Amino acid sequence: MNELRIFIADDEAPARARLKELLADIGGELATMVVGESASGMDVIDRLPGSAAQVLLLDIQMPGMGGIELARHLCVLENAPAVIFVTAHDRHAVEAFELNALDYLMKPVRAERLAAALKKVLTAAPAGRGPRDARDRVARLERAATGAREFFSVAERNRIVLVPVGEVLYLKAELKYVTLRTKAGEHLIEEPLVSIEREFADRFVRVHRNCLVARAAIRGFERIAGGGEEEPHWSVVLDGIDERLPVSRRLWPVVKGVLPEGKE
Amino acid sequence: MSSIRQNPYPEALPDFRNLGVTARALIVVNLLALVAALLAEPDWSAMIDAYVMRAAQFEPPLVASLALLYAGAPWLLRFSYWSGCALVIVVVLVFTAVTHGVLGGFAPASLARTLVLAASTAAVVLAYLRLHTKAYSPALAEARLQALQARIRPHFLFNSLNAVLSLIRRDPKRAERTLEDLADLFRALMSDGRNLVRLADEISLIERYAAIEQLRLGERLRMSWDLDNAPVDAMLPALVLQPLLENAVYHGVEPGTGIGEVLVRIERRGDRVLMRIENPWLEPGAGTRAGNHMALDNIRERLMLFFDDEARLETRREGARYRVDIEIPYRSRAV
Image (cartoon, chains in turn red, brown):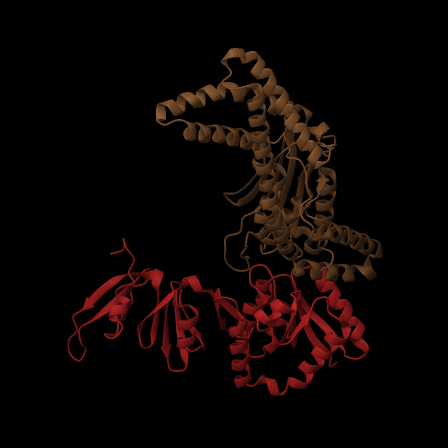
């Protein structure tokens, strides 16, 4: 009963069938069991966490959400599977994707290469579970990504909740976590605010040392008179919520320029 | 890359049935007459008078020659380039002489002088048209090289090979058919993009291509064909439709999460052939691919070379659909 549990994600049915054939072929050498298959990134997000998969064979080019972004979201899982990318891209594209730093197989995949990649997972698995390793992996995926993510991923009871970046009103750093506020509610993510600011420079603006605000959600600014210990300062009024966010004096010159024409 | 022939575009007479060629001949001759009048006359009104006088003399033979060349275009193609040119000049001379006779005393110059002028004008026009064709060929050779690399998307090749591999055990017959389709497709892709092919051949090529994509994408790709009124004997440059269909799948179906319908409609309307390829328009975002318009530019360039200004290629987005329309003059093999 120590078969390696494998999840296959590829939008082309023949490609999934081929991988299953190959896994059966190398069965004598390495026992595996396919615990799930998906044809889209969203489907993987829904079904992979419950499958207890140890390895995900992941196509890079999938409709909806590509493999690279998907792999980043999976990193929030406590028992995230090892990801082996499978791609039809030529060498040139692989270099562009910086996939060299990650495990990847070229389509059409050879049985020997598949077996070698899976064995590597087996030997690396015990050591490769630490949080430091996960961070390292996220950093590499970040470099490999060709653009900003479409979603933030939140781990909730061994399940991944995706929050569309467009729905986020503001992000606020508090101790170890970043609170992510949408109209509907709040989520906690474990990512440094600085890297979010860098990735989404055109979407969010920093209004305070610990706070990024969605440019599109800014409705206006309000002068807070202050009193007691509080100094008078400006604050941001946002669409959809009543909460006011303070703007730091140092950032005010930048922030006040953000308000687009036609908004008051 | 020894398969790429470097010889220049074969010398051929201009296609006298082409509107662009006819228009160019008319413009060049009239411009020459204007320049002659400008040189000969000291002031503007005298210049206009001189031009009108000359026009009476040269327009009839010019129009008559172009009309006869239009009628005799297929017959003219049987001759080599230089004998063809000689024939064109003979035609021009005959019509000029006739006009000179009709005008009689009104003719401003002797018959001999008029004929020499007519012959040199015809030679200038032919030389201009030859330069015009030549100007296109190096650009074409280069465009072909680029196109060769752009057309064969590695992504498509490897995914197709992978799909065939998956079929070999389950459905060997279908695997064989798919490999045959791939072979045909690559034969066509590696052929000379400067050749004309029959529409029937281009259609069978895109059907093979669609069969391979269908295998890969399954029900996500829904092809609909409207080819009942397609003039299968029409001639067109090779590989005009296949890259467009590839684009349609690559940009309109593959990145989408739902079912993508691709429409191919070809019909003849009078002496025009209308070809349309339509695919879903996907909002830019997750998974959509940036295009570089290389295929479109390449196709447009080749259409221009073969049909001059008589061909049209337009792209349009209409709601949730993206459409490419091509219009070319209908020429059957007989011409």
